[in-house]
Image (tube, rainbow, N blue to C red):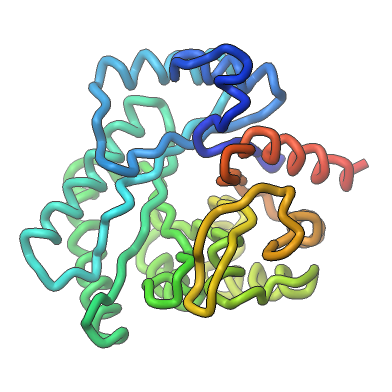
Length: 283
């Protein structure tokens, strides 16, 4: 079965009188959701003891947990000190993930900055190879690293670039952020055929098994000519993309990803909408 859940809790959590992370697993279970993504966006600041306490609650309530590595990771950097730090951020994220009892870590691949795109991509691939060697040596290769499709055209992380990265090793999986993809292509995801084309390209590029077990981020996102501008809620009827045709494409292709909602404040409500809609297709 496809599993659904939010990144963060959104406004509903506080509106219902909750404030602590320890309460999240039981709360999500009560909503009928399946997973939760914990963001280390500004750095990994969670002790081993705390992670294990949280992890026990997630396990008790049957909620899968994934983490998002710090947002400022850039494997395309030409600066060696920053490259060392990037590797450390990912390792710290994976160690925390294992203490939480999870298997999936999402990260942003990087940006060329002022470097020509192909040169930056080659640097990124070398950094990725070095990272993988380190992770295998450190006993962290049993985790899944999900490389995210990015929302701005200037960022590395279009469909073909993510396929190239993910093809590098068995522990690498795609994180298709359909809101990002729609934003960076200025609204290309208009219907069923558009989603199906993207999914089939990933299957062709990295194999069915990786796509069947991939990570998905979904939200509606406002965009400009340069790509992503800001996250929206499912109330938006202007920018999209729409979830319904994606659900049908996933069903028809027999794919079963983890789907994490990143709506702006309504991610729990929108996660439940996606789960209920998808399940209605199975009846």
